[in-house]
Image 1: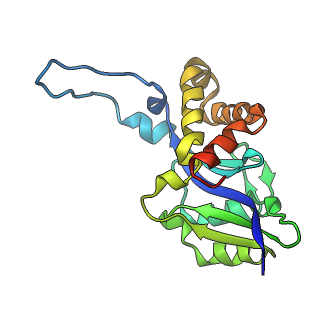
Image 2 (image 1 turned 180 degrees about the horizontal axis):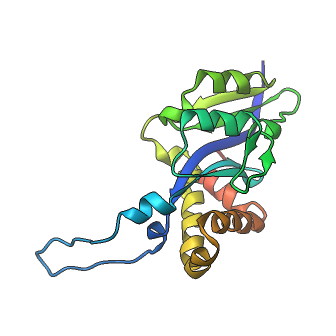
Length: 200
């Protein structure tokens, strides 16, 4: 029996493309409906999804990218098996090496209710690590996810503020630089995001 939770981590995905970073506003005449016209093709060609592990101690602890969106099989592989990252480098599992609970404590991994997260094999592999548990945030309760409640918003603001740089190096490289930058505050962003969700 474990006495208390010492480590708390949140695992979730976010997707970005160039259009999502424009941050532009539109206006219409009073009494008329405002409509926007844009090319949808860029969403298909340039979309990058990032799977992030976010902890109260280290903020963005680890992440992995893929073109398009994650599916259940790739989510399982990236989190619990060796995988090829976006640069073609073989990497160890994104999640399991970070689960190191102290004696008498446990490590809790929070997930939302996305379909790809409900994988029995994932639960079995994580629970095989002594002291690790998986818990799901109730449906439609984004306020209980520190990533949705501040962390991803900070990433978007950083990307929007460096839009020219994003166009120059690509979204994946820019998001990686953004994760590193947001981790350079000594953990204050992470503590604030977890505090917003009442975990601290």
